[in-house]
Structure formats: C-alpha cells, structure tokens
Image 1: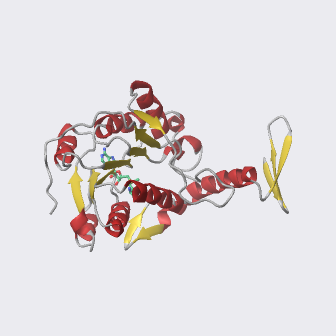
Image 2: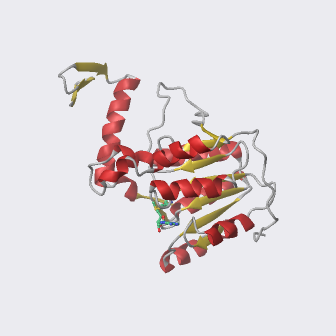
Length: 267
Ligand SMILES: C[S@@+](CC[C@H](N)C(=O)[O-])C[C@H]1O[C@@H](n2cnc3c(N)ncnc32)[C@H](O)[C@@H]1O
C-alpha cells in the first residue's frame, strides 16, 4: 500500500513493514512515477498527444529521451516498425530535419488510407518512406535493407507487434542493419509491469519486448543494454520515467559493419 501524507510517501509491504521517504527524494519520485505510469496506462494518457499535426502514441518523456539520442548519433536513417497514425515518423523526421540530414523509413502491416494520405501530404513527407507489410516478412526486410545505402548510420526503433516472438524476430532482422555504436530500441516493455490492468493479458508477464531483449542478448554478443546518458541533468533523478524499460540495445563498436548493396530511393 502506498500512502502520501503531506511531504512523505509511505510504502507498506505485505508483512506490514512501512518505509517512509521524503517527497523530495529520488525514492519517492520513483514510487510516485510508477503509480503515475500505471494510472496513465489505465486512463490511456499516451493516446492524447500529437506531433506537427499527426497523433503520436508515446509517453512524452520517451520522445524527449530518444530525441537526445538521435541528436547525439545524428543518424542517416531512422527505421521504425509500427507507424499507426504516423506521428512518431513525423517526429523523427522533424528532428532529422532540424539536424540537417537523414531520413526515416516506416513499416506497418496496415497503413490505413487516411493515415497514408496525411503522411504523404505532410511537409516532411520527402524525408519519409513508407513500407507496407509485416515487419518480419522476409520480402519486407529485404525491401528495407535495399533502401539503406552502405556506410550509412542506422538507428532502429521497434514499435509494432510487441509479442515476444515478433520483437525477437525484429531484433534478429533489423539488428543486422544497425551501425556499430548505434542502437536498436525495443519499445513498450512496460507491458510486463501492467499485467492485470485494463487492455492487458496475463501472458504479458513473459510475452513482451523485455523478454525478447533478454533472449536476444543471450544469443547475440554484438549488442548490450546501454542506457544513453542524459546530456543535461542538474537534478537528482538519474533514471527514465518510461514505457520503454530495458529497451536500448547498443551495437558494439567492435562489430563488423555489414556491407549492403547500394539502394537509395531518396533524392
Ligand atoms: C503502437 S502502434 C505504433 C505507434 C506509433 N509508432 C506511434 O508512436 O504513434 C503499433 C502499430 O504496429 C502495427 N503492426 C502490428 N503488427 C505489425 C507487424 N507484424 N508488422 C508491422 N507493423 C505491425 C499496427 O498496425 C500499429 O499501427
């Protein structure tokens, strides 16, 4: 049980032991954040944002944090699986546009006509390439691969089907495209933490992106979990408040860079 009284957060465990934290401590912030994340899940808080006119289904802190990474890496290509309304694609394109280089490839099993039209009419559309099909379909993976030019710096974000087997297959397919020193990000591992909440399933305890990351890391020495540093932090909070726990997989700089055939349909 969690109780907040005046400037104290109290946590009582099942044995009746109570711990008390001042409201201004990182421990209290973490407890409150976890309650806030769960309440946000139940109330569909993340379904209330848009970016430059397109709905984006993300927690704003996750957007800011990945912006920090994109700015640091300055990738040539951001590949995202899971487009939905296109808000995240437009978001990544807008960051690359501000940086002055790069483009975005988005993959979705179904790009609804009104979403496709809105993305294709967007001012940033020249930076966005859409691929329709399952992200783990061999032809789709080959198509995406053909769009990446040898030597380009690639960042991959996985936000499609979040079942363990699917994310694992995506990690295996798109991990090969990630440049050494860059990342593949497995979104929405929060599924593991919200079992029992509305719109969840009991198998989410193990059938989730965090589990896919664990299995992938056991089988793959080229990647490790690396939390990107906060580029600015004059506060006391050192960890992300996130829907993406254990999501950031960095490819070792010692990995051999794969040489793909030159593709490049972008001007
Ligand atoms: C969580 S939404 C993506 C949200 C989006 N990235 C954003 O931030 O606004 C998940 C999307 O994954 C797509 N999807 C589901 N299964 C897929 C698959 N096998 N391959 C590619 N996309 C898939 C769905 O159609 C849906 O649009």
